[in-house]
Image (cartoon, rainbow, N blue to C red; front, side, top):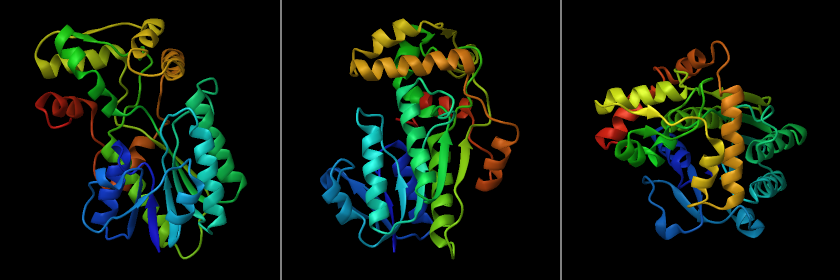
Length: 291
């Protein structure tokens, strides 16, 4: 029986697949366009879409464990509910779901509230599930690197409380470890929630300071203008998504995105190595190692 990975061509999904293959797992990747799939040898590629029940029924054949990752899209919640209902129908009990940290607290942020609804479904329907709740992805910095270097400003309004940013490679490896733990267990294990955080708390001024250090010139924090942030995002994403991102950034300002005591240490113990740091990630971006 295989492990099916959704969101397989994305930032985290690719990492999950690579980590599973390195560990000798039988892996199946759900993709919209198989011609664009580029995975390690041994990955079985299946065409499908989380909005297409027939394709999911086909993809689920011979699968015992599901990695459910669906992106921030207008029908994200509906997609997840369809995927889980059909998984139940197919007899799939073991699931690792990629949610988001503070999904139960940031209830006014649409994609957070939707993910918490999926968490409740996993719980109420009795899945043997690990719910992974990652904090802010360090890879979001790839979207601003050109602006930082061209204008000398760190433009993300992340506030002064700080974000426990995490490297997607660490997310992918922890997800693979959890998938195999569920997959290989002799009996379904109880539902568990795990916050995924990095080793540092990064407020806006500190992010700018790290970029300054790595680039060797002054980078300033652009401030907490969430309305301007929304308007800028509207240049390259739908209005509903830009507003969703604004609401999220406003919660960054009021609450931050913080780890509980001991969480980073427990994740490092799971990995058997230190978590990757924000400074090292920025250094990789500047060196061109991340793209």
